[in-house]
Length: 347
Image 1: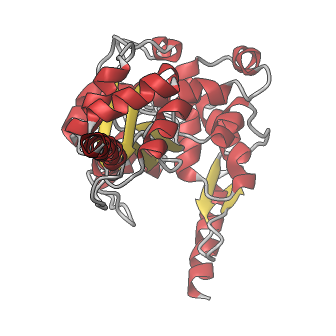
Image 2 (image 1 turned 180 degrees about the vertical axis):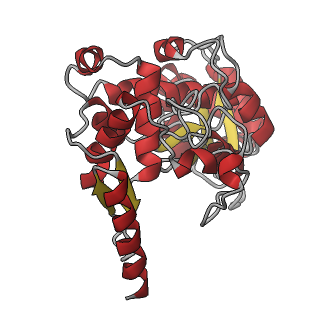
């Protein structure tokens, strides 16, 4: 009887030890605030997943978890993906994450390109927010071929462009996955956004055909409007003035085309600046510049498609803080408007 009692006691102790061993093995590891990332590959066995969690320091004992998964049947629902958890998370929560596919949110890169930005300004913003080298981005957007977005086919191959994709990258706020982010990927996303936003203009292609300009010319005019106009209600009117001057074979004489050639825009251009030799300098060259000088907003594109009809050939900025313009039909009227604008500045 004594031997039986001892044997029973030993068995009880063994069983108790086994229960404690299993119980302890299922307890969370020591807590930490540092997240641990782990990836469950597609087709990965539950045994391999348990080993991975132990290797990553998220569970104490892979063998015990394997047994638990086999008995509970939970292993059949674990989803592939990259997860993140902190040490100390109960194993039930780890399993719940994988059962529900609660993968780690992708790290995103967010940047905002304001309307009227040039490619050079974009490159600086994108480099600052994404870490992609500014020079690399500029080299990519100057490539004349290899683009999968149809609107790039509208860019004349022979055009003497400062930057090939200037004006074709839509100004907006972008949020893109940081993983595998490339300069070309960013550019293509922005090109696709331009196509998407153009589709918001009803029947824009028929309007373009009726206007009698190419898509590249349209984007060039829209970019001029974008850089010249602050007051929204004047966009179509300024676009009309541009068309009028082109019809009259007049030089456009738009300051923004000269500013585009400068490394840093000036608050006020000098006469010497207006003499710079460049096909973009509309003070020296007749017609449109070779291409856009900025990325126009949808409103400026619409204004270029539907300019306001008028007999105006000139405009000058009011110096009264409104940033609106005074418009004139003749050069004589224009000179009077310039004087009127100067008086506004003195008031």
